[in-house]
Each structure stands twice: as structure tokens, then as C-alpha cells.
Amino acid sequence: MLDTVDKDALALSQPFTATLLRLLRAQDTHGVWESKPDAEILKDFVVTKEQRRAMPIIGDPDPDVLWRIEMFYTAVGLTVEAETGVMAGPMMKMSHEGFGRLVLIAGKLIALSRHLRDVHRFGFDDLTALAAEGAKYVAKARAEIEAHPEVARV
Amino acid sequence: MLDTVDKDALALSQPFTATLLRLLRAQDTHGVWESKPDAEILKDFVVTKEQRRAMPIIGDPDPDVLWRIEMFYTAVGLTVEAETGVMAGPMMKMSHEGFGRLVLIAGKLIALSRHLRDVHRFGFDDLTALAAEGAKYVAKARAEIEAHPEVARV
View 1 (cartoon, rainbow over the protein chains, first blue to last red):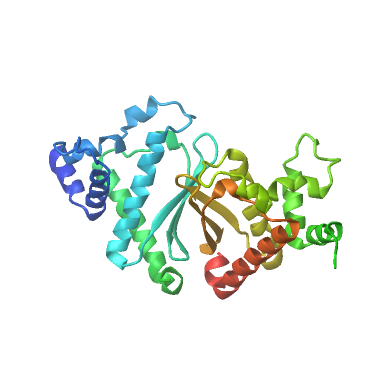
View 2: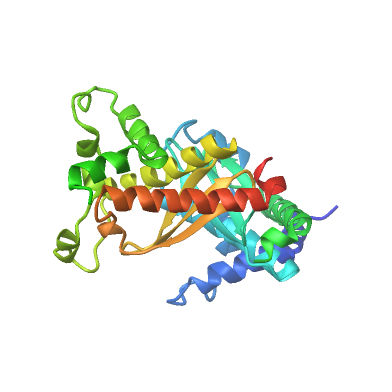
């Protein structure tokens, strides 16, 4: 069985996680993250079950969590682009109390559509779950693009 | 030649304008607009050339103007739905200083995509221009839906 360090290293080497890391490091214009390890950069994406239980059930999402959601789906879009050659970018609409909708747009196609809820508790059990969820959405979006190339490739 | 009153009456009778009016009146939960004529309800959608010239070139859009843009494109979507039977709703993403993007989503199809600029100066020369622009976007979105029914009708 893999221990946590090995599991994290494996998760960090996946294409989606590597893309998310590059995207986040690219935002670090002042170089304050340069010496930080990858797992540290992604630590706010990990919300353990215990942490989640300690959060209020209903809450207004703060700008940081909205930014992390935007980065997560931007990384999904960039990974899709690397695999298909089709650019895909997110648009998010928040309504009230952490409910909303996110779409990933490729050309004229909605390659992925997600109804968001409990946005203030956005996060993953561990890096392995983060990598798996990212890869799942990449695969979904890619399948849509391949099913409708005439709408996606415009 | 039609005088202004006749021109306004003609504009207000168009399907798009009638839909926008119904939508706006539906938001009037306290009945304060009940006795107001239609042209009065739409008056903030009219920004004359003189008014526009008096506005700063760059400005941050206020919530009222973002609300009017959302209502305008929601009415485009409702008119499209009445004509095609396909639901279409807007999503808007604002970046900085009044730049942004608006999409009208029908099923998995982007039926209309508009890059927005100078959002703080959103408005139309008169009700005739409002009716004409609305009808133009309805026709565009409808043509997209008819070109890609398998993506729009899901």
C-alpha cells in the first residue's frame, strides 16, 4: 500500500494536477511561492471531512474560494486543450448562499455543465481525490467535444 | 413619417419589447410600477447620444446597469424560447472596467456570444433601436439553434 507521501507524489504527477500547479504558479507574480513545494501550493484545495464538518452548512462563499473554483475549472479547460487542441474556458454564475452554475465553453459548445452547491465548502478529501475529480471532468468535456466537433471547433 | 409617439408605440408592440416589459413588470413585486406606462418602465434602457457623450469613457458599471443587461438578454432568451420551444438563458462574466462576455445558453449550445465593452454606458438611442437590437439577437440565436438542433435540444 502506498503511504501518504507516495500517494501525494503520484497525484501531483497527473496531467490535470500538473496543469493546475503551473496555472497557480503563473499567478505568483511576486515569487513568494517559488520555494514552496507543490503540495503546499495546493493545500487550500484539500478540505478534509473533519474540516468540512466544522464549517457551517449554509454560508456565503468568500472571494478566495470562488477564485479556487475558477482555477480548478480553468485547469480542466487547459488540460482539455492540451489533449484536443480545442480551447475551453469556464464561466461561473453564482446566485445566493453558495449556489450557482459553472460551464466550460469550447467554441459554441458547453463541454461541461455543473450545478454548484455548498460552494463555501469547496475542496477535496486529499490530493488523490483532487487529481481524480479533475481527470473525470477532463474526460467528460473531451467526450462532449469529440461528440460535437462541428460545434466545438469553430 | 411617424412621429416619436407612433414610433415608440410601434417599438413597444414588437415581440422582443413586449417580452422585456412582461419580464420587468414581473419583478415589480410591490406594484409600484403598476400605473406607469410602458415607455416609462423602459426609460433607463434609452441612453441618447448626448447622454452617452456626457458619461466618462471608462467607468465601473453599477449593479443597476448589470441588472438591465441581464434583463435585456433574459428577454432575448425568452423570445427565442417562445419562437423555438428551446429554453435559452444568459450567463455573464465581467472582468474589469466594464469589459466582459455574455453568452446565451440553449441546451449544450452557445446560441449567442457577445463581447461586452463600455458596459457602464449600456443603452439604446431610442425604443426603436432597443426593439431592433433585441430582434437582431433573437434572430441570431434562433439561427444557431436551428443549425444545431441536436446540441440545443437536449
